[in-house]
Amino acid sequence: MRRVHVLSDDFASPNGLALLFPLVLNRRALKAHGVDLRILAAPGPELTQCDTLIVDSKVFRDHWGDGRATQALDTLASWAERTPTLFFDTTDSTGWVNAAVLPLVRGYYKNQALKDRSLYAQSLYGGRAHTDYAHGVQGITDEAPGPSWPPADPALAERIRVSWNSGFADYSFQGLYRSRLYRRLRLPGLLKPPGRFVAPGVDRPVAVSARMSTRYSRATVAWQRLEATRLLGDRVATDRLSRRDYLREMESSRVIVSPFGFGEINYRDWECFLSGALLIKPDCSHMETWPNLFRGNETILCHHWSCADLPELVERALTDYPRYVEIARQGQADYRRAVASAEGRLAFRERFAAIIADAISC
Image (cartoon, rainbow, N blue to C red; front, top):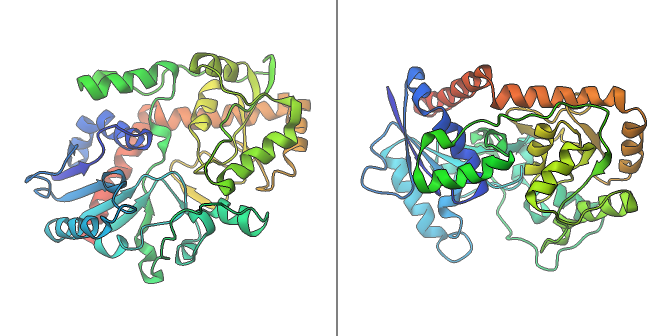
C-alpha cells in the first residue's frame, strides 16, 4: 500500500475543488489500487511521512509576487528531500510553468498543457499561448503585463505532464452548493458526480447563448471574448444572469459560444455538456488535457483564434442543426462517461495510481 499525502487549499478555490473532488469521490476505491490517500489543508510534522507528496500550486499562490518566492522554493526543496514530491499546477491555462519549481520535483503536473513542450522554453507574452497570439498577431498590448516568468529549462521539459482537468467537479445547479457544504461539514455523501444531463435536441427556443464576462485587467485576455461578442453583434446577449436563469438558458439553447478566458477551458464548457447544447470554442488542438473532450468536429465545433470565422460557423450550425446536434450528443456522452460512470471512475483511479507509481519509480 502506497501512502499519498495531498497538500491543497482545502476547497477554497474552484480549481482546488476540481483537483480534490475526484480524489474524495474515489478515496475508498483507490485503496484497491494500492493507494492510501490523505488530504491535508496545512503542512504539519506528518506531511512528508508518506511515499508520495502532492502539492497544489495554490498553497504558494501568494508567495511568488510578494517577495516570498525563495521561502516557497526552500520549503518545497526540503519536502522533496524527504519524500518524492509532485507539484500540481492548478492555474487556468496551458501557459507558463514555474521554472524554478521544475528541478525540485519528480513531476510537474498541469490540468492542461501545451502539446509542444518546447514552447515552455520560450517567453510567451502574458504567459499564455492565446495572449501571446493576441499580442503578436493582433497587436493587443497590456497596460500592466503579467509577471515575466523565466522560460523552463528544455532539459526538464519531460517533467511537465498532464494530471486531470477541471471537469471532474459537479457543475450542476445543486453541485456548487453541495461542494460548499462539504467544505464545512466534511460529509463525503455531499460530493457526487453530476446526475442531471439534459438530452440534446433540435427543439430548443434559444439559438445562441454567450453569457460571459469580458472585463479583465489584461487586454490580451479580454480580446478574444470582446471580438467574439463584436462579431456576433445583436444575435446574442452577453450580460450576466442569476445562476439558475443562466443554466435554464443553456438548457434551452442550441449553440453555446465559449471563447478562452484566463485559460482555454471554462466552467461554462462543462455546464454546456450537462445542458446538451452544441459547444463552439476556439481551436484547442494545441492543448493536451485529460480526458480530452475538446475534439473539433467530434465533440465540439472549433473556430480560428481570430474569431473571423465564428459568425459563419454559428450560422452553419444553426441552419443544419439536426446534423450538428450529433456533435453535441457525442460531447455529452463522452463527458458523462468520463465523470459519471463506473467506467470513468475506474479510468480515473487507474490514471491516479499510474501517476503515483511513476513518481516512486523516478
